[in-house]
Image 1 (cartoon, rainbow, N blue to C red):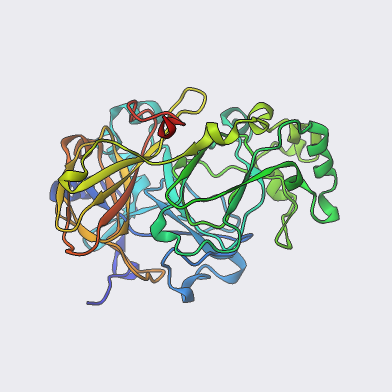
Image 2: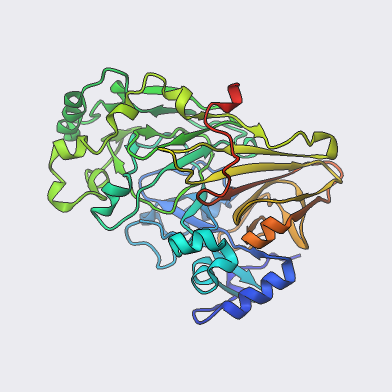
Length: 420
């Protein structure tokens, strides 16, 4: 059967509330989402997103290769020369489509719940697959106060390395994180002074950790990190701010503009200001891994019932739970009903089945404009009532990842709980 494409849909720019309500009634509180592809001009795609190789540069060579797929996103991508809707997920309802952002704007608490709607008036988080051939520059994401100086929001984030998307580790499956204990501000300032001399040496001040499929990390704002080459599932705050502190990566220049793009213009050459954007105590923490590394923790002992739900992203940053995520595995031929505390975005990483009466199917290869059956947004009311997952395969497990908004899961573990 020929796959449905975006070109066959009508894009709705007017009111969508009626269409949203009809779709929710039909599916038991679920919205089908289309793939949302995002390019990065300064990175090389890792080719594990299941995007057809002929479509890696679908936005044009000048825009860079597609190395990210965003999930349930209402956050625009902060790319130069971007498309007007770049980074925004689309809801597919019959032969029509509209952005999830439109749906949330009009339906508010019906989709994301009263607590999140009343506090944020938007869906304030998103997740993505981040997939590169090699490492990316050592960088940080500003905190809320720093980002507010340029009218943006801060960005904590988290990582999980799904085994299904990491059959190969690519060029550098290690991530430099933070700075060696004892590193001085003067040493980092000297790296900035040496920006145009080639490799500015920032990695000489850091420490690399080997990345392991099936594990993850929780990363505070203002912490330096140079993500390695595993394909990464990244629940994060709905912002795209960053500052790159490394001048050369695998022989590729990192423009100074990517260091200061989210800093006040009058501070773009103020090296002391730029150094002070870093969380010094956090970056030089001698127990960095202990305070940030995550391993999956089962929600409950349900393996005998044919399924296992596991926490894959958990923990708090300065006492606040920005996001959490779970991985559900349903055995072949099994069915389960999962109740959650809040709305979530879902992506299928393996297998096929059903979610209420929506078909789930993990594609093997996706064309750029092709619609898929692997991504869903679940409303808070549906999550609380319970969503039924059924694995219709007799051979393969059904595996789905789902991420949640702020303070939704107070019962989630704290960082380090896996070791207890």
